[in-house]
Every structure is written in C-alpha cells, then in structure tokens.
Amino acid sequence: MPSPGTRMGRWGWLLRPGRNPLSRPGDRFEARLLAVLALLVVLAVPAAVAVGGQVHADRLEAARQEAATRQEVRAELMADAPLSVSGPRSEMPHVPARWQDSDGEIRVENVPAPPGTRRGGEVSVWLDESGAVTGPPKTPTGAVFDGIGAGVLTWCGVLLGCVLLQAAAHRLVARMHADRWAREWARVAREWSHS
Image (cartoon, rainbow, N blue to C red; front, side, top):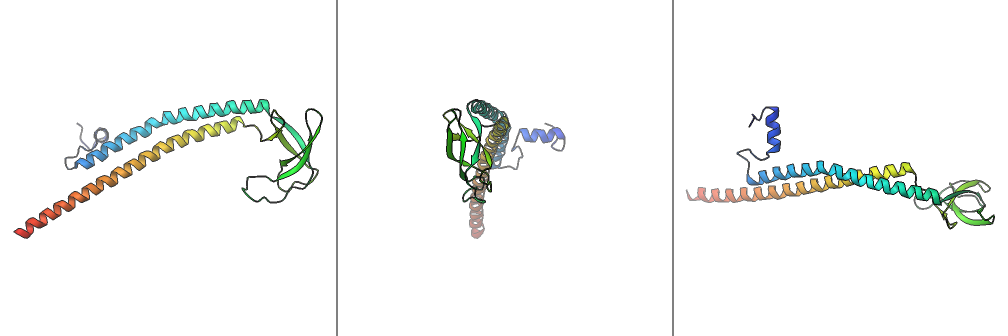
C-alpha cells in the first residue's frame, strides 16, 4: 500500500478505514460506518433527483389541468377591503364582489381582495368548472420550484439521518471507550494497591 503521506496513501486510508494499528475495535467500527454513510449520502443524490423529477412532473400535469379547467373573471368590489388582516400575513381579506358568469347572470360572493382596495375597484377572480370561486391555477414555474424543493428535502433528509446515526454511533463508541478506560484504571489501581 502507498505511503500515508502521498495522495494515493490518503485515498487508500479513506477506502480502508480504521487500519491504524493503534485503533480500537470501536474506532474501526465508527470509521467503517462513516464510510458507509458517506456512500449512502452520495447515492441519495440520484434518488433525490428522481423524487424531484416525479414531483415536478406531477405538479406540471396538475398545472395543465387547472389551466384548462379554471376561468378568470373580473369582479367589481361592493365594499372597501380592510387595510389589515387578522391572521396569516399572506392571506387577503374577503370582500363582497359581483361579476357576470358565463350564463350572463350576475353573481355576488365574497372574494379575496388586496388590502386597501376601494369599493368599485376590480379584482381577478378564478372560477372552477362548477363556477365556484377558487385559487389561480398552478404555474409551470411553481412546478419547477416544487420539484427542486422535494429533491433537496429528500437529500437533506437522508443527510440528516446519516448525521444523526453517526452522532449516535460516536456517542455509543465514546461511552464504551470511557467504560473500558474506567475498568482498566480500576484494575490498575487494585494492582498498585497490592504492591
């Protein structure tokens, strides 16, 4: 095997962990576990890409279906929208509004409106196939971000699991070493007290 000081020697050490003659069995176990977990983290990359690709494809199909089945109409507000909203900041206040549906009938319903929009102002309202108020359709860009997010979260989940497993193994090995060290000191103390 190449000398440990050379580049090949360092790679050889990484491929054969725990070969130091002074290492204890727990050290060798921990080194081998670290090598296996590192390999698992690397192999998780293609799995995370596959998960992200599947989520992207699913969200893109949902975006196409929603774009084909949802209709945008302009609605006139019948009251002022409040300036602030109690609850989540991203949520818009709901205000009565009216619009003409595809049958020519006037509909009145509470719809989300940007805070501070004045009475008589117009807002976009999305309707589903049945004519019920719904949210805007998902976008292809949103599908890309969902796919990337799912892939990254999958890989981070594997990484976190491996880090936690390595930390637990390290604590266990350290505890075993400390117990063995304490037993050895107790044995030596007994021998010294008898001499």
